[in-house]
Image 1 (cartoon, rainbow, N blue to C red):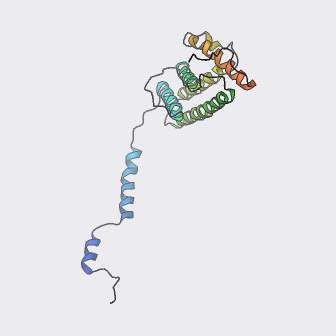
Image 2 (cartoon, one colour; image 1 turned 45 degrees about the horizontal axis):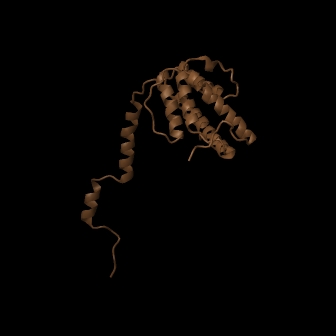
Image 3 (cartoon, helix red, strand yellow; image 1 turned 90 degrees about the vertical axis):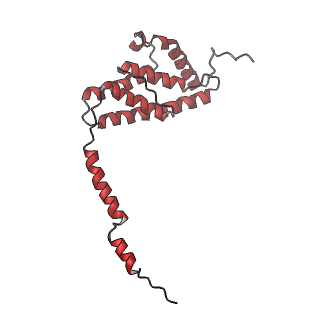
Length: 190
């Protein structure tokens, strides 16, 4: 028995009215492209850009996105610092583990900040003041982590509560670098 590779005549008539999958895909792409060209993307303001920054950092840390609104770079830098400090372990007795946690946090937050700056910079019609605000937030965050205890940030009311926490952080970082144990840490009672 011989099998013919030619389809029956009625099958050819059915197929004549339909288009192929690639033709349908190109038609859909042609319809979608003008829709995306007509999309109305509003320009970023400072608050929205800072939300992008915080969302990128929270995503980098695998934390849920928070809907808190920040209006100024100082507020956003404070929020970044809070996220950073919350990611560090309270127990500083194990200097290698604490150093690894510090290294991991820095390795996640810094690229996330850079990614956010890139997103804000590439946003359509973004004013230069918005990009500068995000870069200022990065500078404030980095300067807060610096070893200089005479940072003018610490004199602002928003930052006053962080002074003892940052003092402890700097001491732990210094001790971890020297592979020492935190002298203020007490063994919890059983």
